[in-house]
Image (cartoon, rainbow, N blue to C red; front, side, top):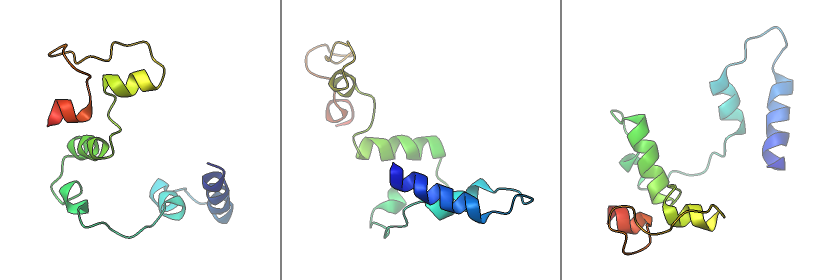
Amino acid sequence: MLKLNELAAGSVQRIPISSKIASSRLWEDIRDKGSKVCWHRLFWFSLHIPKHSIVAWMADLNWLPTRDCLSSLGLNVDGRCLLCSRIAETRNHIFF
């Protein structure tokens, strides 16, 4: 987080006070420009629906707020699947 703050501070300092700050320019300055992965077109293509792409990307990274994930964060939720109530609600159980 500190690295991001340092990068952002450096980017903001380069922008003259009288100019408009474009969020896209700031984002380009602070984002990590790693190499593209072979599967990036599965989520980010010209006619993608942003909401669907973000949910698919979060599912791929296992960042969806499933009950097992919420339980691991310390929230007091029943970890069993809401639909079948037999096993833990995980990304793989819901989608696969």
